[in-house]
Image (cartoon, rainbow, N blue to C red; front, side, top):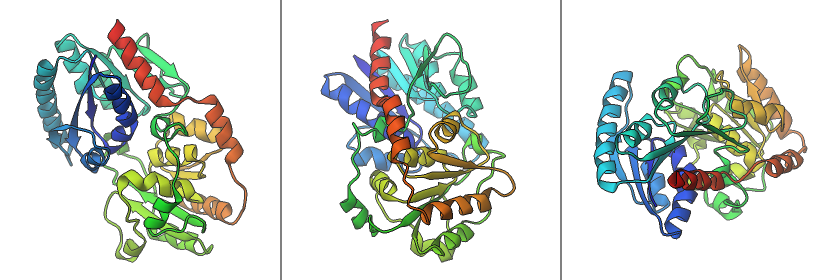
Amino acid sequence: MKVLVTIQHPAHVHFFRNAISELLDSGHEVKVCCRNKDIAVELLDAYDIEYEILAGDSSTFSELVKTQAVYESKLLARAIKFKPDVMTAISEPAVTHVSRLINSKSVIFVDTEHATLQNRLAFPFAHRICTPECYYDTIGSKQVSYPGYHELSYLHPNRFEPDPQIVREAGVDPHEKYAIVRSVAWKAAHDVGQKGFNSVADVVGSLEETGASVVVSAEGDLPDVLEARCLEVPPEKMHHVMAFADVFIGESSTMAAESAVLGTPAIYVNSLRLGYIDELESKYGLVHHMTGENAQQNAISRAVQILESDLGIEEQRAELLAEKTDTTSIILEQIGSMDEQ
């Protein structure tokens, strides 16, 4: 079987990397095409995944349109040459369009309801659309729902074991209390009109008043006062630091979910609502979603409460893991079944 995987974002590398490895180990051919966006290429290199860059990043909507057009035309050329049986991606229109043109099959994985532009461009052409059971939207006969989250494709205990030595090498004591604060760049299409922190510096200062250490992870530039707290760790090792943290507080829904499935209490400060965040909060109590005018202050208060208490969330995490699956197994199952059609 020939499988073509496209990578549009660093999180997509994590999502597909174990499936790529298992496909190759099973004797299948895999081709990876990507955009040179953020640290996606750095992660592909770190995991020793061969790839071809088809396009770069874009900072405006007009640039995005041009970049997508270039990406799709190059992907079509590569696909004609490679002749994949199955093409796969996360919410990626190009895969669905190209697969129709070359008589291949496409399976896409989607967990972001508000990625409306991408979804509208991709869904009509996709052969199969895989969503977590907590996904709000009903897509139709193409939809396959599964009991899991994207983050469990690489952070399920079958796939990941936290290493305290890696945390020490990052300059953090895994046995001391520390918090992770994450800010985002607000450049994604579904970020338009959304809101998170008012002041990252105020968040950090309030958490440090508890006596805990605070490390900061940021997509954009940080105020000079926070540079010393910026976490210097290779991106492929970040999850080890997250696993030993006492609390995560940030604007990133992906990192909030990652923290939750790792057993770290997560506070998500962002007006964007997502099905998987809602489930992690309402069903498992692993995430606290803060929105509205007082979102930052409420988030700080909750984080301080967590840091000053000894209450763990091991039972909630155990319940989650008992009910959810290793998502890599879903990826492999869906790719394999598409090839059989």
